[in-house]
Image (spheres, one colour):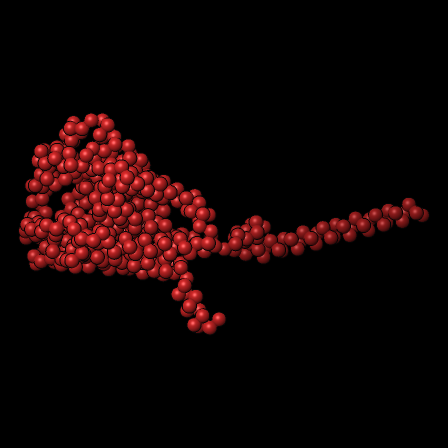
Length: 476
């Protein structure tokens, strides 16, 4: 085959195009925020604008990846059955997800794009996880390390130098007076959630190719970034998870468990440095704004308590099938809640009704279980971190990339290595498996067979000779 023919074959290889567009979707997801789109004149989350502007460019790339990947499969029905058998959590989620989008469009007459975009790239990453070459996975991990490192540094720079990479505009309105940094990922809460998930992945040993010094430096930079982004729930949950895990390790050490001396020395050196820098930042006034948010949250905690009163304003039928959105907005304003429903599950209930929300939550938790099943140690803590996070904010009930970024960070930092080569190779024969179970066993097996054959031959020869002798005596 000539070089031109090989290049033409690669060009029309649909699976290569699927991987290409998937990589593009991940890069654009973390590189282009909603604030960047608004700065470029695209009305992504503002009123007006063309319909195509309401979807993120990463969503378009993910759709192309799925289309090329599906077209590249010869037996598509068998492929879908295999995916459902191999990833039952993903299959359950896809079923209830599609059901909710149809219900939103046909019954609630609400746009389905928030549901579609919020939950597309995460399951797509789960679907592509086994298909990506190791070189592509390493490149994406390196990209995530570099981008989240730069994002945290930009967040600190925005806080200290009082500038923004992109104007902080939400739904067409300029959010002035908010000290929180936006950096590359956009909204401060999205920044805090993604940085917190990445920090926990690093703490639990994500990307085993990292050295101890590099890992410690990345964790330290993410701590600074989270202070700049001001996500209180993300900061508290990260601190609680790390403290609980550290306490457990110390308890095991007291009972005689083994430990790595290098990690112990690194912790002994890093602890006083972190405490000193934290004290310097506190005394220097760099954390005044963050502390002020814990003292005065501008009615956020009060809104979470008051929103429970919404249930008294609607009948059971309304709560099951979904109340009128305009009535919900009116009740929120009458209760003095201007920040919206800061709980994803309650917001979904009032948007789509209790029945459809229940089915969707079953599918969503099945998807989280699938992520947990395909991840290493520490994934359960990250999923708890995410659930608490979206329970304290609008989160997945609105058009946001919070789940997509969380799923990508979890899969590529703490995902299990799939034994693709072992699955692709034809299984050896059972006899050869038994013989080759230990080094040198095949040679010893052959030697034993040779000895046994020699013994059997010698036995047959002696029996035949004795028979001939006996026969000869009887003949005489």
